[in-house]
Amino acid sequence: MKLLAGRPVLLALVGVLVVARLAWHPGRALCGQMTVAGCLGVAVMVVAALAVAAWIGRATWLAIGAARAVAALPRLPTPEALVAAARRSGVSEVVCLDGPAASAFCAGLLRPRVLVTAGMVAALADEELAAVLVHEAEHARRRDPLRRLAGRAAADVLFWLPLVGWWSRRRLEQAELAADRAAIDRVGRTPLARALRATATPAAPTVGARFDGAGRARVTQLLGEEPSRRRPPLAACLLSLLGLILAVSLAMCVGQGLVSAVAG
Amino acid sequence: MTAGRPDPPARAELDRALGLLGRLEARIMRAVWTGQVPEPFTVRDVRAHMPELAYTTVMTTLRRLADKGLLVADATLGKRAYDYRSAGTPAAFLAAASRREAQQVLDRYGDAALAAFAARLDDLTPQQRKRLEELEGR
Image (cartoon, rainbow over all chains, first blue to last red; front, side):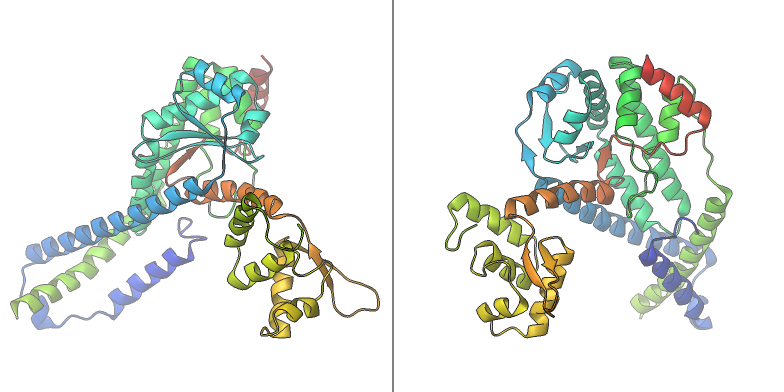
């Protein structure tokens, strides 16, 4: 239930799903029209079709929102220090944003770009800035914004399968580790460690932010150790199984209703 | 800002700043920033320019603008009504809004469509913390 904590809309959806299933009592005549295999097949198709449609809708919604939000951020002419750091680190295109906070990120689904705030340029030394740029450029090369969008939309739509959320966060962590490896190879461990410390986010996460940036795993890798392999939590597995049974069971009723309506 | 029509760049800045506000908030701030309502001003002064608005409506809107940091409310001894004045120019408001916006964008889409560099480091073990400091010191 930790996955649903602080997400009242999803919690309400789960509640609606449970109530809908409990309230649905299909008649004997309706259930008796199909074999178990046929009923199950229709149910799985209904669940899959609904999930894909919802995933496309959610991904589109997030993509439009993120693109608009990033486009609205105020730009500055790229300062010389940033141009020099980009040249040294082999990053072809970097955008400078107005703002005193030290932030850097990669955005753009089809054409990912590295965006750095003026505060970040002012806060970091040349080598540290280069480490940040290489890290973000690796995200751009891997098209991580697109992958994140796909994973997040899947986790949101399939909220009743907590394993998908766990898998999505695991992918985020792996992407951060891969980007850090590129920065270590190109610039070194020390500048990356300094940059990571200089930009560390506060202990209390801001409302809405769900991913903590994989800080512990990144530091473990930075110190030359192998980040621990994570297994999905048992609770997430059990909840996912329950969610799957619930969704397919509900869809079986819906599927039978559809078949019955079509058959006349 | 003086009363009358601002020059084109200032007008564009003013319009962008007002675009971030609600309809009534924008109407009042336009009057304040263009000097149509001289500072300091009270609810009554604003109503003199917008008589169609109810007293309580203007009072609530001014309080909301003060809560957002666009206005400063001064309580004067012996007076029941607050004196309000502008907390800054449209440019200053836009700058503050852009700082908030950048963080909000990262908070909202950081795990959805953006890949941010920063991470939380508060759950490191004491040993990891010490070794990280040693690495930074090299």
